[in-house]
Length: 345
Image (cartoon, rainbow, N blue to C red; front, side, top):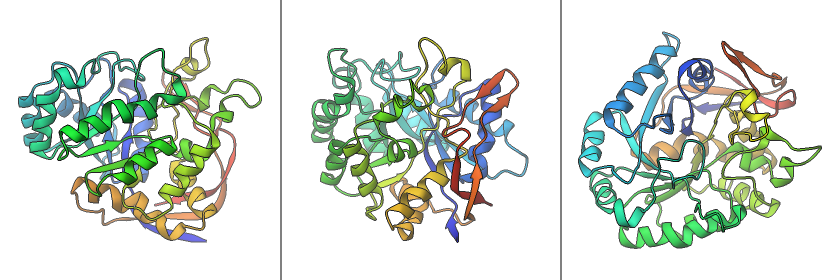
């Protein structure tokens, strides 16, 4: 079997910087036409000037014939100004602003501490500029159970925010729960959308512990119960335009994952399209795969769809055990396992 798809885009991607950037970027550039690049570096990408410089760094490590287009984002802080949003829109390379509640995930310590008290003028300017807000949708109160943080964020932050600024475009990133699906479905099409990762579609929280602690299945938001995984699969395979591909591919060196306090993040760039095809095939929805991977995202962002194509072949292949780079190695998602679908440019 062979599928020909309009070249997909990745609407949630971590490329890191330095040696790691040079090692992982080609895996995404090979498969995708564009990607929304996350800004949680150290230091974070908080200004348009920094976003332009980071974009240049990405382009320098790509093959000379690559047509991959990194779509940059700003990291929202308590001190971001409305003028910075204007500069971002005028730049032509910044496409969104990312909300990390302080402490929610990797390198989020500089994130927002008081969204309504300190960021409303910025959010109002974003609505004026039609600049989407990309949301890591979890509260960070240590008293809240980690499996309930998405649900509580919707009720205490996201719903009140959209009541105050209904014209603000929002992408609820890497959704993980029935609650998030219900919320997205309750919103008007074109105003609120969601990205869904391959890991949250194929794994549930048992995958963290089966056969021992599995650090390479640890990500944030953390994997949830099977009932939530099934809800996500139903949502993305339904044909709804509100959901689109966002891998949240987040590479860390092996030693940062396999240690006493391991980092959150799954490097899925080499396997994501194969896993999405697996999910849609199992749901008898391969006819809806292209819209999820290639149409819904650019339509939401108001961008043209890609014109080039990519092929997916029903051909078993083995995922490498690890990927080496100059200062170490990365373990990809499902390392050493077999998958039924593979990409062919």
